[in-house]
Image 1 (cartoon, rainbow over the protein chains, first blue to last red):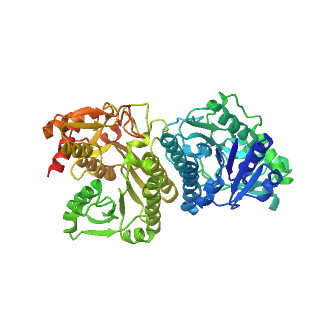
Image 2: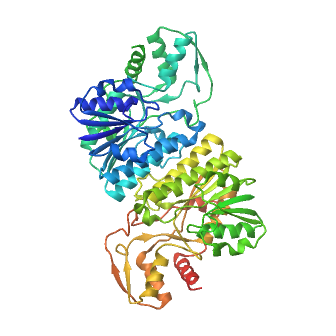
Image 3: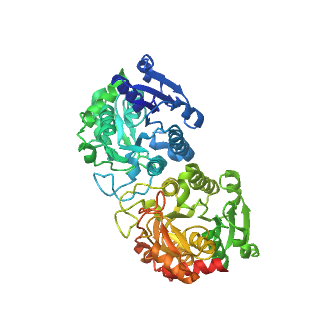
Length: 309
Length: 309
C-alpha cells in the first residue's frame, strides 16, 4: 500500500503513520502544522519510507502533487475540536468540507479511488437511540463540527456512486492516548497543575460519554480497510462502556493525588453541541473481529501519563 | 414580513415572490440570472413592493447588503438539477453549500434569524422505507446534489443550535407547473417536437416517482412557516401518489397527439443518483392542515400547457 495520510502530524494521524511504517508500507504524509506537531513525527522522519509534504489542503495544486503515485488515502486532517465551532463557522466549512472536496478532486484527477475518513459520533446530534447504530434515524445536527463531518461524508458517498470510489467512514467517539491534544483530560490536567484546590467543570458533570484508546481505534481502522469491502463502509468506533465526566475527574484526581473542590457551571451540556449522552453501537465493527483492548479508565490514565512524560 | 427570496427569478422562487407580493408583503429578491429568467419576474418588477438585487451568493458583501432590513429569508437559490452533478462536483459545493453558508453568515451579521430552505427528497439516497419519512434511517448519499443539500441542511441546523435561528427545511419531490425549467417533462416535450416518431428514455421507464404542483408546494411552504414552530422544522413535500416514467410519457404523448416508438437506454436508473422509487411520507405536513390540490397527471399537463403558451 502506497498511502497518503492527511493530518500526518496530528494526534491520530501521527500514530497511524507510525503503524503503517512499522508494517513496512511506504507513506506520504501531509500536514499544514496548524495543530500538528513535528515532534509527533520525529520517528517517521527518520524512516526512509516516509515523506513529509508541508501543505494546506486548501491548496488544491499541492494536494494533487502529494497524491502522485499513491493508491490509498487516509484523510484525517480536520478541525477536530467540536467545542469552538460557534466562534467561527467558516473554519469547519473550510477545514473539514472544502479541504475534503479538494482531497477527493485530487484523487479523481490522479485515479486514486480508496479513502478512509475520520468522521465523528457527533454526527448523530442528540440521538434518541442508545447505543446509537450507524443507521439511526436521520439526525439533526447540533454543532458546526458535526455538520461539517456530515457534509464531508455525503461528498465522499457521492464520489463512490459517481466515480467508483470505495470508502471507509469511521464515526469515532473521543479518542484518548499518547499525543492527545485537546479535550477534557488535557483541560483538567492543566487546571489541576495550576490550582489543585479547585476544578471548574462545564455542565453538571453527569454528561455520560464513551472514549476509545488511540491504538484500539487504529486496530479497527486498519482491520476494516482490509476486511470490509462494500463500496461505502460506515463504521462506528467506540467502547461498549460509558463513563460520566465525574467518573473521569475521579480517576484523574486519584492519579494526580489531588482532591479539588468541584465547581460546576451547571446545565446538562458543557458547550453548544455537547451531547449529554454518547454511546455508539459498534457491533458492526465487532463483527469484523475487532474489540478494544483498553477500558476507558485505562485510556484516561495512559493519556495522563503521556502528559507527565 | 420583510422577506428576502434567493433565486427570485428561478422557477419556484419567482412563483413565491408573486405570492408574497399578492399577500401584500414587501420582498427583496436576489438572483444571479445563471438559470433565473427576467421574464419570470416581469410582474414583480412592476410592483413597488419588490426590489431586485442582481447578485451572486458567492459574493458575501452583496448578500449582506441585500439582507439589510429583512426579517425572513426564503433560500431557494441552488444548482437545482440532480442529473449533472458528476460533470462538475464543485458546482454543487459552491452553489448549494458555500452559497448557503454565505446566506447564513450574512443573516447572523444582520441579526436575521428565520430561514426557509428548499432541500430535496434526493437526500434520502436510495431508501428502503416507503413512503419515506423525515426520520428514515440515516441515508447514504448517491448524488452530489443530494450531498450538497445534506450539507446545507446540517449547516442550517448548526446555526439553529448555535445562534438561536429558526428553520423550515422542505424536502421536495420534483416540482411541476408553469415556468418549469428542467426535468423529464421538458426533455420529452422538446424531443417530441423535434421528432414525434421516436422517444429516447433514460433507464427502463419503470422508475416510479412522485411530483408536486408548484402552487401546492408553495401552499405548504407558506402554511408551514406560519404554523410549525419548532426550532428546526423538517418537512417532506410531495403527493401520496406515484407514477412511472412510462405513465408520464403516456400523458404527454396523448396531450401532444403523438405516438412515438419508445427507445429505452435500459437499467433501473436514468443517471447517477437516480432513485428507482421516490415516494415521501408527507403526513407531518398534512397534519398542519395541508394537502395538494392537483394530481400528478394534472401537474404534468399544466406543465406542458405552460410550454405551449
